[in-house]
Length: 113
Length: 113
Image (tube, rainbow over all chains, first blue to last red; front, side, top):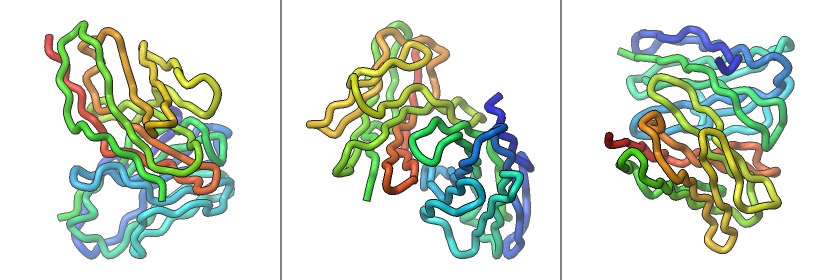
């Protein structure tokens, strides 16, 4: 058990819809990372937050947004969903801004039909 | 931009044989280097990391990796593979300036009995 909790574990929705994925980091970790894993794109870095502030952004689509709340949990919002958004979305947390070990959740598997 | 290349998509070895997984990175300065392992249906777990100092680093589960600056490589090795090592292995790189942990495309390890 990594200590990182992601909900929901599985989600099936239709194109055009909006979903929210939730992540609770390990106790005390200030950094939260979001990744998208798909067969054709591999593990893609989306965004990182540190203590509530966005610190790094990767290949995150404009239809996607994220935030980290004062209690340090984070949410990834995916809107206007397309078939190609079907993937496994991982959250990870770390106790450092950079160079720390990332602890990964088990992921949220999103299926867009 | 930083990048990580894992040239081998799949590797098959016999149980008890030695293993080397290749990783090359592209970045001007010395980055933080990591190896993570992902078992089926699970999140990623850190095997080992290199920040500075001794270029041969030891990790969990009997793995080690060697940083070679001249070759921009950080190859993962294990002297004797166990069937439980079958998984997908990811090399990753992060820098002080980018705050992004970027993963390679992964190498899937199959272990023959």
